[in-house]
Amino acid sequence: MLDQKTIDIVKSTVPVLEQHGEAITTRFYQLMFGNHPELLNIFNHANQKQGRQQRALAGAVYAAAAYIDNLEAILPVVKQIGHKHRSLGIKPEHYPIVGKHLLLAIKDVLGDAATDEVIDAWAKAYGVIADAFISVEAEMYEEAAKQKGGWDGFRRFIVEKKVVESDVITSFYLKPVDHKEIADFQPGQYISIKLDIEGEKFTHIRQYSLSDAPGKDYYRISVKREAGTPNPDGMVSNYLHDSVEEGEILQISAPAGDFVLDTDKETPVVLLSGGVGLTPMMSMLKTVADVQPERKVIFIHAAQNGNVHALRDEVEELTKLENVTSYFFYDSPTEEDRKNNRFDVEGYVTRDWLDEKVPTKDADFYFCGPLPFMKAINRSLTELGVQEERIHFEFFGPKAALV
Ligand code: HEM
Image (cartoon, rainbow, N blue to C red; front, side, top):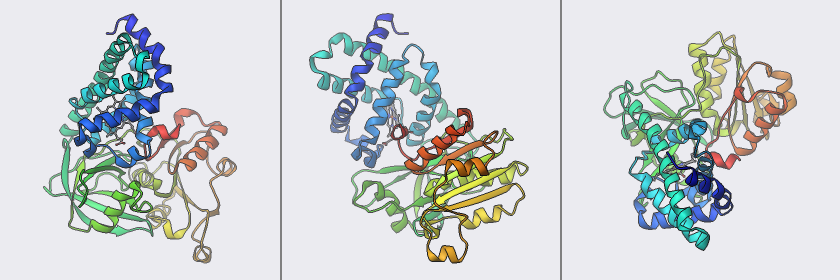
């Protein structure tokens, strides 16, 4: 337990560090990767280049420090980050490395303002925060390993089937090379894939939501080809699309993530997705149809047009069921789309439309998609009076980008 003086120093300096947050974490990464280039095998280079991870880590450390005498209060956030860390293979021995370089960066940026007393207090606080993460993650590693079909670290899977779903989205069906059982998962969870790309010095790890229902002998991911290979965001997805064929081996960590459908509830469920954000929603839709056929579910998907709209046949098949309804929104439909009646609404999902078509009074809402889509849906639902506990969302990328 920290002494009161340390707590006071840490809490009173949180705003100063926040103010210099980005400068400190940018310096932190420079120093850390300089001394530990091997960590570039774990960190997402695209997030680094765009400063997204800088903001995510800075935000989390300061948020935690502000609660240093009551970390229990932020346990859900620690767990959410813990899922990501476990999926990436972050281990206790990594924490002192981060701590050491964070303190060095604070000293560098704050100069004389970072007195020994301040640095000491932050060293102690970081230790407490790190311990909270390490213990949450230790439990997660244990659970992943002991679960039926589960495993620790990365396991080899073969690409059994590769299916083009639209102009931009392709599915990969993955089975374990050892032919043994695979861990069950909850709809909404993701896996990490670790790739060795020819000509690249470091491995690349990316998370992809599982897009099929649990209970199969394979995992399916559906990957969007991100624009342009010079764009670091696109490197991994383009590699998967262009170079990973059936029969190829991929390294995968066990399913993780806390954005999951609550199948204990019986409330109507509204699943909203924009673009490739449909992947966790597909898993949720199929799960409700499988295990809660009496539950009302409304599947709303927004895409540019029919050319980039993936998995529509699977959704249409399910809408034959009595309790499943779907709506497709296209903002730029093609002539073909119009001729073949491929969509229900032209334009975006609006508040008024939601008010008219979905049971906002008692439904649970799950959504995932690009940032503007997520913000618009969140705003609409809040304005319609949907309570926070009925709003669940996932954003592909560091959560801080949403703030
Ligand atoms: C992701 C916080 C320690 C490696 C994240 C995220 C946060 C965070 C907020 C983003 C989560 C998300 O997007 O869902 C923290 C805090 C730490 C800590 C507060 C210390 C107490 C570490 C350590 C390592 C690490 C010790 C390994 C050396 C990563 C990686 C990601 C990540 C690789 C994925 C994002 C990316 O690659 O850009 N962490 N982290 N973190 N963290 Fe940590």
